[in-house]
Length: 320
Image 1 (cartoon, rainbow, N blue to C red):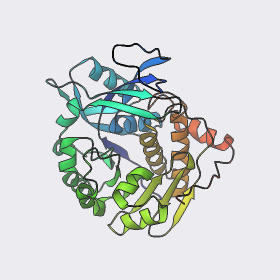
Image 2: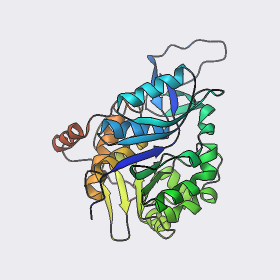
Image 3: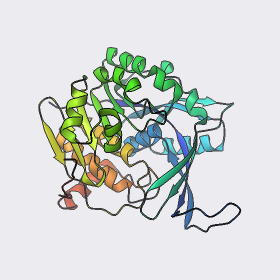
Image 4: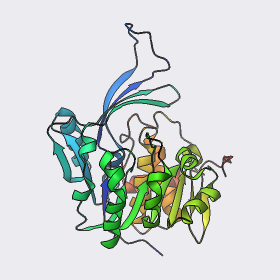
């Protein structure tokens, strides 16, 4: 059964990213180390997903908070350039925009130094659903008020008839299922990677992860497997869609772009299998450029790339 068309409301962190690469080791204090590039980018779970959705042609609104500063103005301009409605982004004048310095090594692995800033001012109780058909929560763990208010937010969305999704992301407080379990019965879709699955479900094996969350009420469980694509679990079926063979330059934001690709395909009437394949392609484009959003292209361009990309990776992942 196809999922309905409609606007997508995204909530989550909005971050100014400063990415430094390559950094394969740190010099001693007081020294200087030369690098190839230091670039500014749009970051944050919510902002990257919303930007990618906009670039893919979806009608999308972002709810969150930024500071009244140059970083905040930069990220809002970037979001608007992709057609994102930022009318629900709150300006917090006393706080700086959430900021990350990301150190990226030659293998595209990352180390982040992060200031939460205005992210903690974002109030889920102020999120409005008018005109939206989907709610996507970029992460329930990265923003203080959202961690506490996520259940109420998703309950309101369900009462309003929205289709709900959450991208789990990492829990820096280590509370994991203590805070996440109440959300499960309210989720139509759950996106998570294998590391998050291990912490939440105690397993990285797709069938076990899918069963764990479906037993707790989640409708569709989508396990992101990096270069090995993704695994999807529902009450009716389980399947694996291989990833595309591309060279990773920077994996920042790839998971958020994956979620955006999946949802952008669904609202155009794609099946779950088609949405998973499309999501893999969007993530594959993301990791070929530095920054979370630089590699995202339009929907038709991505669809054309899939047709000409050849057979995705058939590498067998041990988690399968």
